[in-house]
Image (tube, rainbow over all chains, first blue to last red; front, side, top):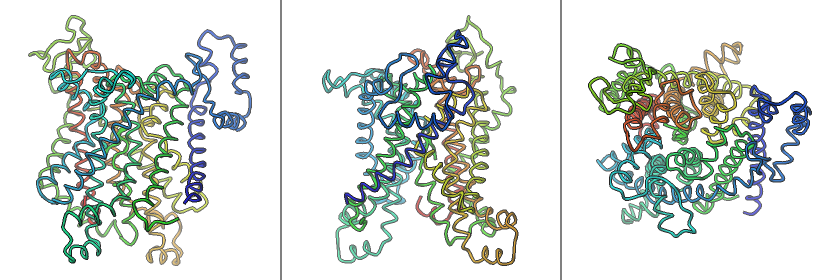
Amino acid sequence: MLAYIARRLLATVPVMGMVAAIVFAILRLTPGDPAAIIAGDAATPAQLELIRRHMGLDQPIHVQFLLWLGQLVRGDLGLSLISNVPVMGMIADRIGPSLALGLSTIVFTVIIAIPLGVIAAWRRGTLVDRAVMAFSVFGFSVPVFVTGYLLIFFFAIGLGWFPVQGYKPLAGGFWPFYQRLILPTLALSTIYVALIARITRTSILDVMDEDYIRTARAKGVKESTVFMRHALRNAAVPIATIVGIGMAMLISGVVVTESVFNIPGLGRLVVEAVLARDYPVIQGLILLFSLIYILINLAVDILYTVFDPRIRY
Amino acid sequence: MPANGNPIPAEALREKPLETAPGRQPGIDSAASALAHFKRTLRRGPALAAVLLLAVVVGVAFCAPLLGTTDPIAINPALRLKLPSHEHWLGTDAYGRDVYSRVMYGSRISLIVGLGAALMGVAVGLLIGVIAGYIRLADAVLMRVMDGLMAIPGILLAIALVSLSGASLFTVLVAITIPEIPRVVRLVRGVILSVRSEPYVEAAISLGTRVPTLLLRHMVPNTVPPLVVQGTYIFASAILTEAILSFLGAGLPPENSSWGNIMAEGRMYFQLRPGLILYPGILLSLTVLSVNVLGDALRDALDPRLARRL
């Protein structure tokens, strides 16, 4: 098992390397001289030359890439062009709200979506099933910022149940902290709930055709036990897979949700960096989010053994 | 489905055709029955509603100048943030522009982006996918690049591409399309690999069929049904992504009346005039919803095995 985890961890290295290469290529191959961008409009040619040498831009491109990779491996993401602060530190300052929003969304989604999918599969073809499926298609189609503003409109402005926007750290007490997370969580989880409910239903229906389900029914096991013990457990692997794959959606959603609800997390940092053209920050954040995505999917792979003891390594 | 960041919509759903492909011979001979099936699906409620709604959106996009609209970018400082009135059916925005006209014209940009991304994504993905599926040496390299691209959340990749290359309709279109390509490549490659070992392909090879004929006549047609479905989903996802990019300020230049831009400009005045976000938002959602429903209907028609469940 440990050997398997080690092997899988190793296997993520080339993917991360490829992500780094793509990010590097995007930044270097797009038109525009990075030194000119950093120096600003008023720079003299001599200053430009200095910056170029300082950044290693006078080296051949593959040497530049390796130098940059070396920095990355040491955890050095460079300095922000705007504030001259290490990118790593900026990320550390802003990661809290994003983690809170992400975790709250994942927990809420799993609690809501899996039962919804189970019920839809159980009552297949009924009104309940169709309602869940209809919600799922809707969830895919309404952009997260429209959902977000609708929620603000009804629950914050109309009913006054929640603050309109903003964020309070957990240190200031649980309720002020969580009260401001409820609407963002609802907005962000809509699409995720839609996806996972749909996959849960499909996976269970797939499993229901298996022989061992017929056997279980034939020996008189209660239908609810057939569902929970036999069907759901065997459907767990595809469901876990989609929870992992859906993380890409969740990460993109965090960027938008934080903008709608004015939450000072990594998503807002992305938008601020893009508007200010702060390339090292953009670069660092893309790498970080990709790493998170890859690691979560690795964790899901390892979880398979828990759900399905037949999978051995 | 979507992606938008909603990127991704249902990746698992997208992967399915790949798994069901081996052994099946989709394509030409089943085209007639698929068409019949699709027509039958259309007679049922949701798909029919979706097609009608899309027809309306396309009609609006073509006929925008004829629908009682004014110049969508004509500024009138005297009429800032007015409520809906006889002259301005949906009121005016912070620059005194007519919201109704802007929303009507906005459908053009969404359709151009959706269609452009779907065509470009399918074309490029098909080319790379065929190469990866047919040339073993290229396969390893190409698929590693695709793995890398897929590990980067789509919206982030698109934001970075736009911010680096400057915002224009073309760069936004390219930036939206690139994150969609790996999925098309995987799909095409899967189909090509699975039909390679089919007896009819082996027969064609042993008859000395030249490679271009072999690929175009015997192999590529099998990719058409899943690509049609995938193209529809890219269409929906691209419309959403454009709106998100514009909403974040990293999309089309503000002078474009795209739905995303209208909403982006409405953000500051949301408490005062929620309509600035809600009208384009609802239209956008309905359009994407219709495309998704249509995509599901197409998938049901083209891939009956999958349709049984989803």
